[in-house]
Length: 96
Image 1: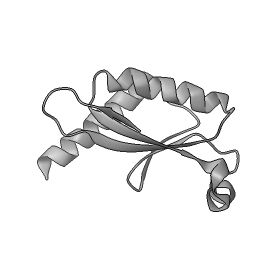
Image 2: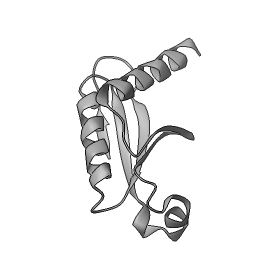
Image 3: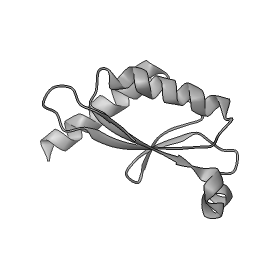
Image 4: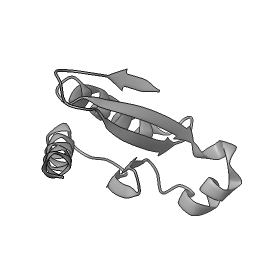
């Protein structure tokens, strides 16, 4: 699990569903790392191959990036698009 904190904002908690040997998963992981230098977040990675229910749910339809129950990205996302989505989520949390 990554714990990355910048500034005073509470980190967003993200979950990346992936599996070993998944090239798209590697690319999304790198995109998340890039964005994490600008937005505070924590990342939990879940290897779906260790849980048959997750294999049944996702199969080869990975990577999937979630914030709680909300899907943020599937298969891939640019750093700019991910940063935009996460900043909007931060704004919604700050308004609550």
